[in-house]
Image (spheres, rainbow, N blue to C red):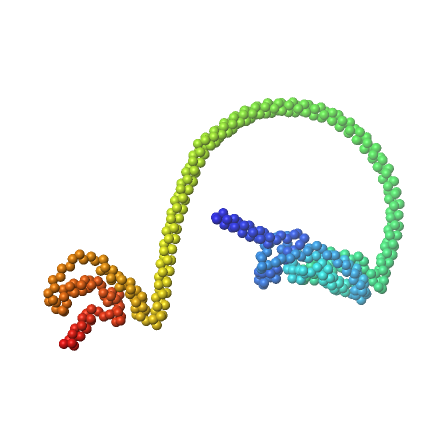
Length: 475
């Protein structure tokens, strides 16, 4: 029974632990896990509608909380803006491509959880497109065409600043802006391009003429410099040759010195290597002896352990087995005596219970019969008792008769002088006294707290008084 309870507890704990593990959710790096439901309060103290987790994990309380994911993958949006009015009231076409994605900043993630959770990529793209078109028109309306066309960095910075602020309200972040080309209906931008091209061509021609003039001057200077360099080269050659010869002699001497030093170092290294080799051989020999001694010691310890195990198996284990056998036999004998005593006790209890049930049934039936007799006597208990006595009267009379039936009288001598006061003879008095020794019915009824009914007779004293009264009347 104990093992079954333990198994049930283990199973319950395992199921609980598995359920807890299933509710512990990890957030991938390319997603935001939004926990909604009962999430407590945020940093400002107000009740938070959702709690966002990025790059971690969290436990989701069952019943009270649930979770969903927001995808961080970039969304590419093509915004081909047409007929946008610039600051100069010139309509231009600005084809752009924006790359946006859900932001991982704390406030932006909360905004995304409140406004984008459950929406598809197409729905998010449509919402972002409306915001981008509006902000792009607003930026173009504040800039000249020259600024838009020439200073692209300023234009992109203005677009990013305005768009970023609006996208943050719904939890998005601007990743990149790419403006492919800018066109206008009036040809203003094309004219600016032609003007810039003509200016560039003129500047190029001017630069070519200047470069040709610089080329002629440079050629003359180059020829002069060439002659000077030749003379200097010849002089430097002679100087360098002499210096090379000197360096060669010095190099030979240095080489000889280096060779001698190298030979000395070689012999020193050889001696050191020989010394190290001899020392290493001695160390290895000592280690070999130490390992041999250690192996012998380990072998002796192993032999001692084996002897100890053998002695334990030969002496301790049989003793433990014998001890456990005696304990089991004693427990079996005690269990047998206990079961025998329990069986005897159960038998006695069953016997006494059966007797009690029998007595209870007899008394219950007697009480039921007495109740019915009282009901038959119209609720008068005295009449019911009289009915019961009337039913038992033959047995009572039979009992009285049996009381004197067994008396044996071998001889009776009567001295009758007729001198009795009440007119009875001695024989009559003897018989009357003999019958008087038997308890009359009236006395039995009095001992039970009852009176004998009048139709069954009157007490002896009353009968005597009645006889005397009759005698007096006769006189």
